[in-house]
Image: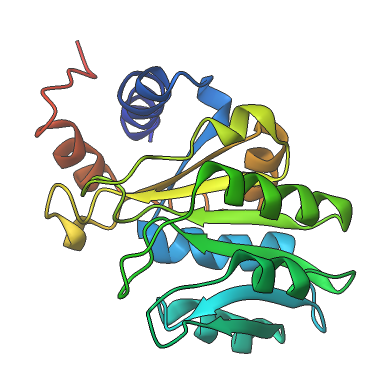
Length: 212
């Protein structure tokens, strides 16, 4: 356990936080991005509440909403495969717990402008809702919105090592955000959610030396 904990802290601090310009307590590792989504639902939604998202999108958001007894209120793409941000903003109300944005969305591949992100985030903040930005595919040519976590205290970013490094079977993801939000996530995590073997292999493609 001390070995696993040391390597986990090294990856959080030197591989992720340093690269993103964040403090170590602004990062938490998860057992793949699926666990990150599950932890978000467990921590920031309540039965009878609402999650706003677009459709079609990653199916796990629907599955976890059903598991948690949360309404998934979706906005569909139009015939030109576009989402109108005003339609998202109109869906955000006092019942909304979380707004899910995918950067870029899968399977459509669309992204939002900075102004659109700010419009959504500020409306969500008015009603006390979290904005959860899924960046599983961000390495493939779109701009990360991690800077928004430094400006707003209601934004979390979800990432995974599965896509860029082609190591989905190792099940390692991570969440970035305000340290207070990250602490809430960690309070819901299992004690050993990311195993030692996965942590060793995560550091290998990046030439990161965690153990002297």
